[in-house]
Amino acid sequence: MDTTETLGGTYFYHGHDNVTKDELLWLIFIESLADHTGMAVETAATIIAGQPIIPKRQVLGSKGKRTSIASKMARRIFNNARFPNGIRLETLVLGEVRHTNKIGAAVGRAFPYLGYAQAVILIIQVSKDTRNKYNLIARPEHRIAWTYF
Image 1 (tube, rainbow, N blue to C red):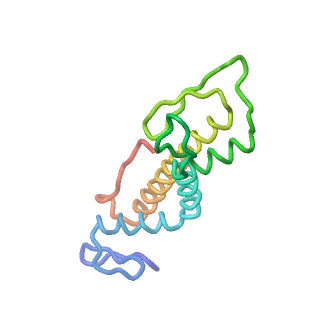
Image 2: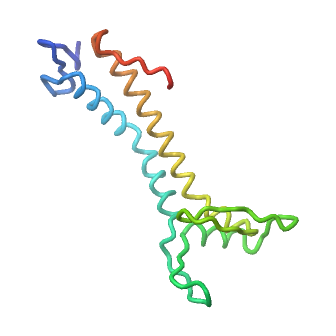
Image 3: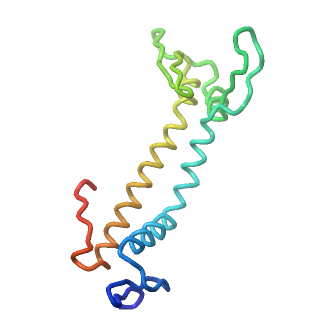
């Protein structure tokens, strides 16, 4: 084979020789992760933009409170728009449940969870690619039978 060979019970993969089956799996995983890093930038950006890192102005009862870039932008975009019929949504901010009836606040607080979802999807895609490529290269007794993805 061109880039993958077996020699004396070990593997040769992209310039790495005497690679064990476990090392081969990790090499393929790292290669697959590197192939998917275009999503990782967006994932990190959405998670960071949703974190409360900007100090809020001090008013009575808001000692040390912070807001996020996503929340500030969503509040600007949606202005003072509110949910109809006085609906109040529960939102999660750093493990604390807060209620709001403003659309901008709800969107801004939900923003980091888009990044978390992208991170989960990225890991699933990398794992599938890793399994498929590893099973193509590895000997039958070393193959992985993951049935859940």
